[in-house]
Amino acid sequence: MPGTIVGARGDDYPRLDWFLSSKRLLTSKIIVHSVTTAQNVIITMSHAAATVPRRALVVEDDGAIRELLRLHLSLAGFDVTEMADGGRALERVRSSPFDLILLDVMLPGADGIALCRAIRTEGANKDTAILMLTARDTESDKVLGLESGADDYMTKPFGVRELMARVGAILRRQSGGESPVEHDGQAPLSVRSRDVALDAARRQAEVRGEPVELTKQEFDLLYRLVSHPGIIFSRAALLAKVWGTDTYVTERTVDTVVSRLRRKIERDAQDPELILTAWGVGYKFVDVE
Image (tube, rainbow, N blue to C red; front, side, top):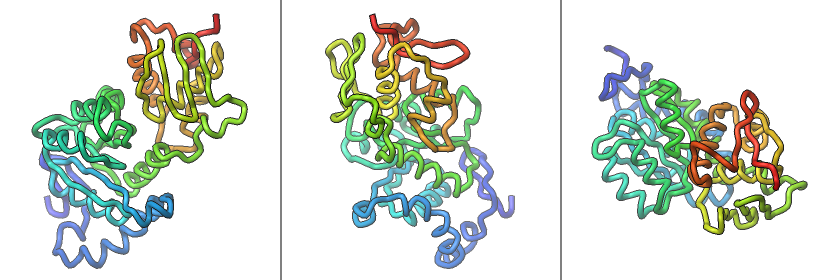
């Protein structure tokens, strides 16, 4: 189709004149458009990040999309590594740390869901920000992606401005702007309730005396609940307390993080004893005995 980028799986993308025509346009029209798009991400970086570029890994088997992502991330100050094979990407992420991973779902070698779960299990990128990009757009696909450990999920075709805004949002959450743990003056630095002990200063969690690895969002949400045992928090309240003003996070994200937490801290995630559901309202941590 003239004026359209067609992905390897038949995904149609809006016309981008600079991308389809000669390489000369990559040094003219795209620079003006892309610098504006990337500004919000650039200004959120610290002075240290400006001198030492953040590292981004793009795992995408479609060469045109991979080039598009590389270009905009580079303009936002990232040192970008590109890979097209899930199996090779798995070997890379086990040893090389990144600040951001953009991950397609349908990949040769290893699919994105399995790759995301492997990243969250062990290696140098257990806490790295992960944004999934995929043509699969059903609710069940999104839930599966988020439950596998992704911080955000974006469907193709996507707008570049929204993509970069989402990148900025998850990086703010990961690097920690207004952390509800660090900035809640009413909460003690260390809390303990039932089988859970949390040390906010060290961001360490223990359950039944055993250390448990948690992502930033998992730790912050659990800290909020454990600090107020027996108090019911609505999903909207948890969004406001844990995610702040991030407009790209929905109440469904709360359910996803709670589901991941239950798998990590409950004896039986299907019959939770610690994080309880208040049907039609939200969640609470079990009352103090």
